[in-house]
Image (cartoon, rainbow, N blue to C red; front, side, top):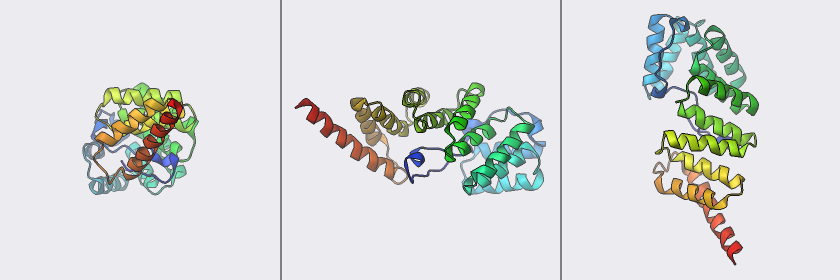
Length: 227
């Protein structure tokens, strides 16, 4: 996973799945046994450099397998070449339509291109297949938010909190969502909850600054309304 925080679109925690949450059985049609084991190793690891080397090895061994096309899409996504990444993920899905990781990454590439409807469609398809995937649900909420469907975004983020109560960044997103809905007290409550519990100041510095500023503004706005 990685963060991009340049503008409102990039304030969301979005990334390309390489995490243990996705350790699920997959059919051998995706690739040979050796390549399948290498891919499962990537899913079990948080070591980015090791994963990068393994994915390159998969490309070298089986470039035309579903895993090979997934790996090529991942590298293209890391470079910001989302159009070409989409082509690779779609090829992987053409080989194996149930390849959930590839569909999640396809949706995320659509998101970074600002193609909200396409991102929403693909995230929803992933969740019908794997409803327990919290990252997909989180990203779906972000796509709804960016498309202006703020009730839907809040609903999805609340679902993420139900699945993962200790995922404090979700409170920041809920602050954004409730803010857009005009529910200022709830927005401020979530901003404050995020600020109280999120300890990773380096990774979330921009989020912390924005939440600090906005919750203070809401406090002043509500004070004015009471007078």
